[in-house]
Length: 129
Image (cartoon, rainbow, N blue to C red):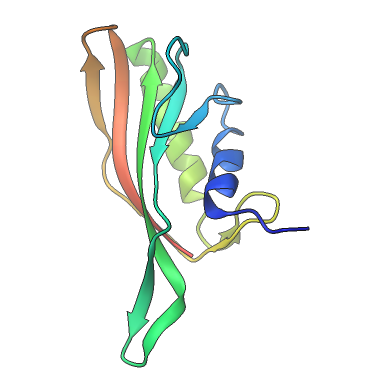
């Protein structure tokens, strides 16, 4: 079996959060997608470097955007997503994804999307694998 990539494992984990099954998207959701849903922005990450050179480990920066129809939904879904992300630390994510050494994240910022009157929670995180 081929191991999951970081993004495949991330999606599998986040889709296990109640209300997000099939609603986790890279970069943007398709037009017409109804909240709640989650958008993530990721990269391949940067390899860690020591005095002897680059290592096998790396840090992956992520941006998470949680979109909800109501503020109440946002206030319940954001902590659920954060709890799932905190659970990554010191374990393999996904069915056969990478082992996460460390998780660090910034405080979520809450926004209102005035064009559609939906609520957004946005935060950055760094995952070390």
